[in-house]
Every structure is written in C-alpha cells, then in structure tokens.
Image (tube, rainbow, N blue to C red; front, side, top):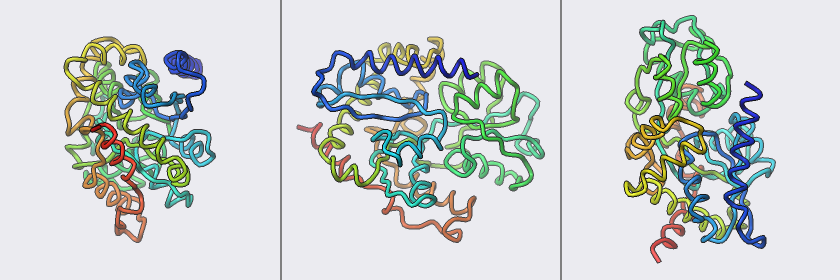
Length: 330
C-alpha cells in the first residue's frame, strides 16, 4: 500500500510540475490541494490546455491522503486552495475556529454506497465495519445517515478510519477489509467490476448535497481577491472545456493519464461526470439547497448546534465567483 501511494503521488506531482514547466518563471504559483479522483478533471484540463497560464499563474497541484492532512495543511498555509467535500470547511470553522470560506461549488459527490458481496441489505451491516475517511465529516455523515435510515444507530456498527476514496477502495477490493463504504468515480466503477455491490447513489438515498468545492482562508482571499477571482475563472473555463462533448476524447485521455485507469473506466467516468444532477454542476455553481442539507445532516448526525442547522451564509462568500463569471463574459 505504502509503495503504491508513493508511486501514485510521485507520478501525479511530476505530471503537475511537467505541465507547468514551460510557464514563465515570474508567474505566481498557486498551491492547490485535492484528493485523487475524477472530480479534478477541470484541474487536469486547465493544466493540459494552459488555461491557468493564460489567466496569469502556475498551479502546483498537490494530493492529500485524507481530510485531516488537508484541513491542517490549509490552516498552516502549506497551500492556498483546497478542493474537497466542503463539509470539511464547516468542520474547520466549527471544530477548530479557523476563518475559512467556501468560494466555489463543484459536484454532488458522485458517490454510491458499496458493500462486500456477502452483504445483501443495509440491515446486514449490523455489527459490521464501515470504512470512512474522517469519522465526523462529509461522506462519513452521509454513510451514518444511510445506516440510520435503515435502523442502524451509532454503536450498531464499527467505524474504521481508512483515508480517502482511493484508500477505501483498495482496502475493500484488495484486502477484503470493511463491509461497507462510500465511493465515488472512478473507484466506484472499478469496485463494481470487482464484485463489490452498490446499494444506491447517495443523491438518490439522501437528496441534494453540496460535496466537492473550493475553500480558502478568508484572510488570504481578502488579500488576494484578484488572484482568487482569476483562479476561479480559469477553473470554470477548464470545466466548460472538459465537459464539452466535442472534447470527450481529450478528457477521457486525461482521466486515463492522471488516474491510471483503463479507458473503458475513464469513458464511463466521463459520461457520469457530465450528468448535472450526479456529476459536475454547470460552471461549478455552489448548490445552496445541497449545502443546507449538508448542515442539516451535520446537525442531526453529530448533534451540532443543538441539533438545529444554522444559517448557511457565514460559511461561504461567492463574490469572487461572481467576479470570475464577469471575467469570462468579457
């Protein structure tokens, strides 16, 4: 496992550096931290097509193994921008008192709830092990809610911290660990090919959800408003290019290159990612209804805010996104 991860992250880091090597030395560099996965297709595209360069900066694309590392890294200013499930931003505000803001949407998570072949229903998970990234944020809360809706409360099953989706996939498929976990594309496609069973898409089981988005320290955003707006403009332009059916083959090749997956898996991934309900939201718009559901889920499952979700406005600031759209309209 350790050797695989070293190889994956080394290849990914080399690719990001190589894509940017021809950029002018004087161009500023933005350090962007993400989980491995198809949700990064706009970043892969922007690097490959020089879109970020045209907007005036380089990208140092970094990969994180888990959300704890990412949250700590952002707070410690090891990078400027994080892309991940935005519930992590809420956790940084509420759990650690960090002044973090969400500045961009992205997708509904592209998640499905998977179980080992011997599990026939969610009720069968009583006494079994659920693999999660962090125990009290994002997709772990989705998994807990799915279990709760099927009569399983905390204590009726065990949680095991296994890291991001890539690590959970490898634990379930290659090691036979855990009885259930949530996975997104392309790992969900590969898991199904290996006999791991899906019991449903989270968006169908739980409704709208604001999942992947970009979040930053508020102080950095205030001090770098123009740079952040140009970054978001480049990201949206890259997303538009990547999802254009005319560029399907290019996007598939990028998924193959960055994720080291077979072409048939990349093709399925691309087609699923283009579904605006399940995959990327148009122009990476922030899904306010999905975010309200996220807060309600945290309030219910974790008992935060005495069980009543707060007003959502304190957690996001879309002024930079609106500026970005104006830049693209020029």
